[in-house]
Amino acid sequence: MGSGGDKAKTDVEAIMDSLGYVNIGLPQQRSKNSVKAYIVTLLSVLKGVRELKKGDTLVLQYPLKKYYDFVVKHALGKGARVITVLHDLGSFRRKKLTVEEEVKRLNLSDAIIIHSPAMQQWLREHGVTTKLVQLGLWDYLSDASPASPVPSASGRPRLVFAGNVSPRANGWLYDLASDSPDVDLILYGKGIDQTRMTPNIIAKGFVDSDTLIAGAQGEYGLVWYGTSLDEGAGPLGEYLQYNAPHKLSLYLRAGLPVIIWEKAGLAPVVKELGIGITVPSLRGIGDILHQITPDQYTAMRRNVSDVAKKLASGHFVSKALKECCNDE
View 1 (cartoon, rainbow, N blue to C red):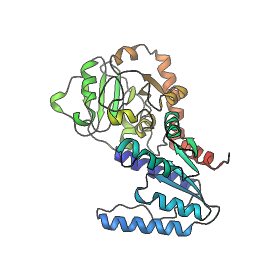
View 2: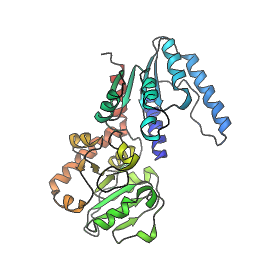
View 3: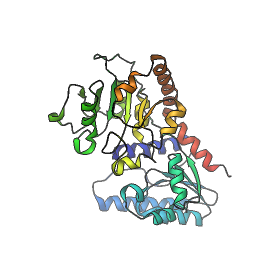
View 4: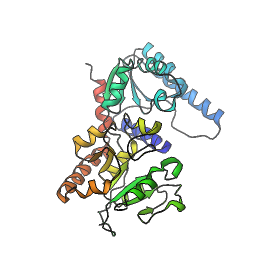
């Protein structure tokens, strides 16, 4: 979900702006001309570094491609404090650099905002010694509000999934539909395979996030990656053990409790906040859902509503930034 990553970064910028932080680079812009984009980014980096002074706090969103080491070292050289907001680990998911290279890079920061307890443990085990602050959930800014729930026409529980719905990207969706005919799958995204459609798949096509928040009808949002119904398999599935999926926050903003793998990095957060259920596998998910009482589900939706208000206000990023600035 590249777009999800962009949304997370622009939301962090907006939250920082509301807290009084100043963007010392050039305004965000997109360019299809790679040379022009490189020059604009370089000028932005140089401009930002030049304006830093002793006592400033510099917040960087990571990964920052080629410029991270350069910016951090110059900032520290000027006596500024550096906080890194970690979106993605290049050594873990994309294998763009070695673990040792990434750890050395991250240790330059004074503090790092990370995703989960499991990510903290992984970073510590691999040599990160700097201050780590857990985010918990990505905030999700939007003016949209969830619609009032509408009961399922089929009487079956409805599971919402937003993202690429092609068999190549998320073939497990079609396996789930066949495995659990007692649930409906409401799919928002491109790539539906008409040849693998079953009566319990409702394909809605791609919609933007505001439309999804305002119009998603279902009982749960599915937070699942990989190639298997039984676990987070494959590189993306394994990464679910550590990261905080932006999609989870989107479901909460849409008013939906979530279903997440019990070994996912955010499973403890989902349990603690009472905003969904954690499962060892998606097989037989209908049986699990039928055991949840109406009172239990109502309580979950109430908790989701409370957390969604925090996501809409930038609560989690604001809290993490403040914690980074509190000296131990």
